[in-house]
Image (cartoon, rainbow, N blue to C red; front, side, top):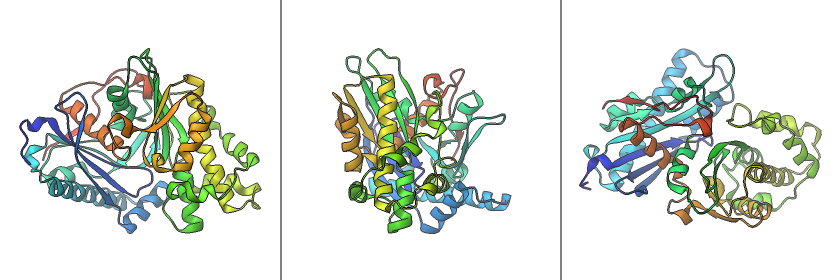
Length: 371
């Protein structure tokens, strides 16, 4: 593929909290709206996925093990990029830069020494792909007093905002985050709580499946009000925004603790209640802040039919659709966001994240690694 202006082509990479693989996108930014040129999903090898999940669950690592895992993830990401280049018939010299989110293994944005840690050695990615790589986006935001997350709303604001319509966007990955885009321009965003992470854990435990396709298993159960109330009592949900969360809080241990007094509940009823938990936290947070005329969903949750139906029931007078209606397939929005962030960094732009993460001033996000 020959590009008339190579500086408009960027690659975005992300592996989310589900750790199921890396989303890769080739994006053309020559127009006002980013154009998806090619996409590729590289599934995580089972041994690598399990290793990452163990670290996310708090398993201790030696420095040698940590360094090795960082390199392994970097090599995995680089292989995904090279496959994307092959399927799109694109040469490395045609790409301005890669934006690599990496793999989050720990997110601790509060306290005396806040940090957010993503693995996936950017030096390896740059060297093995022969493409300049921008990575480590979150830590500068944390250094500037921000939460380091969510960052995808920066893209939502740039391409989904409408001056005549009140819109909201929700990314439902492992964790859910909302972006409120009122026509007034008083935008804000934060993590509402769990997205798919608890449902994925529960169906993995009982059905040995990575996720509940279409919410089919949840639809065989019923919501248990007392259990839903227990979930909704989680203190994080009452915290003011800006705020962010992850597997450090919402994980299997958290769920098992909540279920300790509900051992008689059938597994499919737990799944139904978890789905309702995700829908309730998203809808309630949006309802407290605005009355959007449309909610656009991206991430894996956009494919969960039962979840989409539940959101539509809770948000009256609001059209619920996927971001495909706005021109970007819901599976690729977050990867596009990191291509966009790489472009902002290569253009030398400082980004104001105050309304989304709480950073005290605009900063340039990401470090640049030469090929």
